[in-house]
Image (cartoon, rainbow, N blue to C red; front, side, top):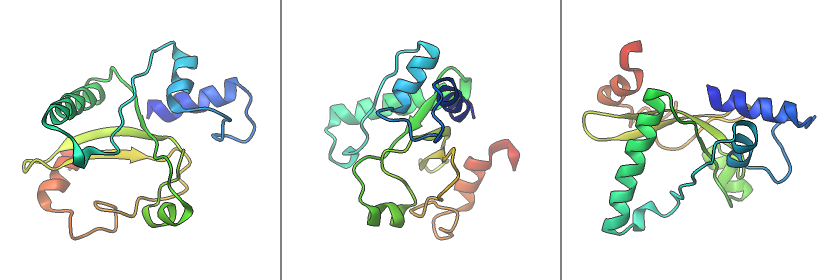
Length: 150
């Protein structure tokens, strides 16, 4: 939950009264301004068309992301771009909005999932593995996501 708290602190420090609609801002810029940390950006848009080399890079990114969250040494955000209103309504995501990535899990069968939280809590994901997607939530996945929380 550090990412939303840091972003909220950034918004408060800079006096933006309207909340998270910081003009010209991205989560990377916000975190850099507040912490001095130099962000790294990963474009995951075209993952289905990656070359073999790029798949190796994706494996390394997954390792960095899951270790960073598990060990607490990194903050991650996600921000969809370029979605029209229709796609936003269908997916439950807002284009240009920053979401906190608070967990990365892999099931025993190799399914990888990210827990993505909306600091505004204004919408809910509607796609695969959403809370209403009973077809894809197998006992294996539930065990991976719930971990020791059982």
